[in-house]
Structure formats: C-alpha cells, structure tokens
Image 1 (tube, rainbow, N blue to C red):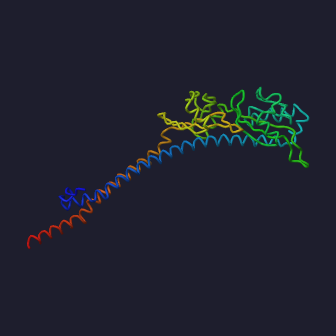
Image 2 (image 1 turned 120 degrees about the vertical axis):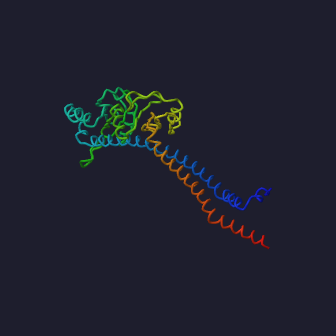
Image 3 (image 1 turned 180 degrees about the vertical axis):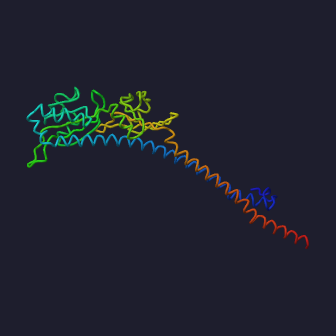
Length: 324
C-alpha cells in the first residue's frame, strides 16, 4: 500500500485525517444504520397499530356475542320456559318473550326447539329456522347441553346467534333439558353504528368480496381479489397502504366451526396511524444530526486541546534542531 500521500501531509492534517477515519466515518455509518433500524421499527409499529384496531373490533364483536349468550342462558335456565315446552301457552309466550325480548335485548331472531331439533316457535321471519333444524350447528351444540354463540349466515344476512339448552337447575331435583333456545342479532346498520361508536373507526363486513354491512354512509366497493384471496382462503391479515388518506386492515370473520364466513375491514385515518411514526422518525433524525454536530465540535475541541499543543511542540523541536 502506498503511504506517500499520507507521509507528505503536515502533522496537523495527519491528525485531522486520523480523527475523520477513526471517529467521523464510523459515526456516519452508525447514524445511517440507526436511521434504517428506526424506519424498520416504525413499520412494525404501524403494523402493530393496525392489527390492534382489527383485534379491538373482533373483541367487541365477541363481547356482544357473550352478552347475547348470557341473556339466552338466563332465559333458558328458567322453570317457566322449561314448562312452556310442555304447555305451549301462547299468552305466556307473548308476555314473556314476544313483547319483551326483542325490545330489551335487541334481537331479531328467536327460535325454540324441542329435543329433536323441531322448531316450536320462531320470531323474525327466518325461513331456515322452521321445521326440523337439528343439523344447524348451533342447535347441534345446544342439544349437547352446551351454551355457544357464533356468526351464522342467514337468509337476512350475517347474524350473531347464541344457543342455550332449556332446563332448570334452580330446583331440586334439577329438571333435565327439554329443548334449545336461540337468540340472534342481525349484523345490520344499527349493529355497525354501535361498533363505530366503540372503536372510532370505519368498519365494513364483507361476504367474500361483497360488502354487506358498513358504518359508512354508502357501502364500500368490492375489495380486490388479492385481498380476498389472502384473507378468505389463506386466513391471513392484510394491510392496505395504497390509499392516500386512510389505511385499511382486513381480517377473517369466522363462524362457530372455525371456517371463514366473511371479512372485516377496519379503516383508520392515515395521520392517526402515521402521527407517532413521523414523530419518532423526526426525533431519530434530530438525534443523528446532534451526534454529527457533536462530532464536529469534538474536532475543534481536540484541535485546541491536543493538535495545537503537538504542533507547538513540533515547532519547538524544529527550532532547537535549527539552533544546533
């Protein structure tokens, strides 16, 4: 390696060049690395925030299901309901169920079956909940003395439905199961508006790629096939960053058996998601700039504390040599 160029430099320039190589270049490379790591980390934060919005929406839907199930179980474990299976008293049904449950529990579906899965009463005009419905997944579970809820596709759209066995555990001896009770809430405009109030986001429910319920004034357009493929068939979450003002995240909506029955889209204003990202990125840039500024300051500080005394010493040595 040829060091002639370095040897021809003055001591001042040699020291300065050594400082640049030892301090400034590593610091610059470190700053670039720090910025890249920051950008990568912020992308992760962005994904986390979008995933959090989706999870929040799904948890609220699940919470609604559990509330509906609790109301269903409360009515199913009631001696008077158990007795109605035998008496079929229309007046009792009107007072305690027809005139009370829809208004107070916000349900659009009520179905009562016997132990064979035969519908004894149905409210809500759902053709598929008439006759023998023992093959209905919710009724199947209810006939197994289980209490379940799930999202089911009905003739009137997607619905959140809960099922409970009809029995009476409040007396001794306990009265055995003699039927199944189902309450259901349609995922309609009222349901969606309540989701928006609780989350603050725009939410749309899709069946495949077709919107069926939305918090928006008008239904959103059909989603691209790529998103539908990723979410519906692969079961993965998809984050869409292609829109200018908003960001959207899509996740699968599963039924009682774990199959994807639809998609849920959660739309968040881009500034709400990227605000934190921009602030952290700007802070990283400022820190990098301050680091470089500090390095430059160190150059001048070392120049005064080290380089200048060395240069004076060198000059004094040269003066002594000249006198000799």
